[in-house]
Length: 255
Image (cartoon, rainbow, N blue to C red; front, side, top):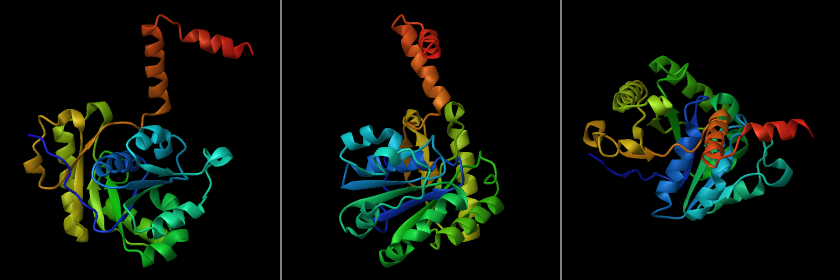
């Protein structure tokens, strides 16, 4: 069975938070692309923690779908700095379309939101905690609740919903997704926060039981690949073209 995401944020500002490695950026990017099919969407890169998995890495693809991407430019584009651009405050205050904020991991990454709390509190927002039951510290209800409390304290904002994003990259199957969803339901019961949606790889469209999920499904296309996997893909492409990727290393080493 297949289905599309029917989730519509309660408010126009959507903050994506969670523990390190939960897949927040993947969720933020895929959610932005999905919602852009129906309305105007902007995405803000607020991740000042992880230099490898940031939504700015797929800026071109998002802009092709009409999404406005807001992140530091020029010399600051790759900086690990708590840079709050005037554009970001302006985007929060702007009443048009949906604004998705990709926030860094754990309470350290969420602390950047405290500098925006004054405008966010005046503009009601949705703050979604991404849960990945296959990551350390969030494989239990207690761990998920602890992460939530730390993020709320650091950001001075409240989590309003949960996203079940359990996966094992290429080893993910429907059982993996439903294992994570069961944990998310337990967190829902313990916290009173609703499961807003569950994610599943788009390759499962024809086999995943969306009715059994009992909540909207966001189909995920894996875009945020680790540098070593990107290098492996580049090397394979070079070989298909009949080139030896080690030649580039030798050339670089001789300079």
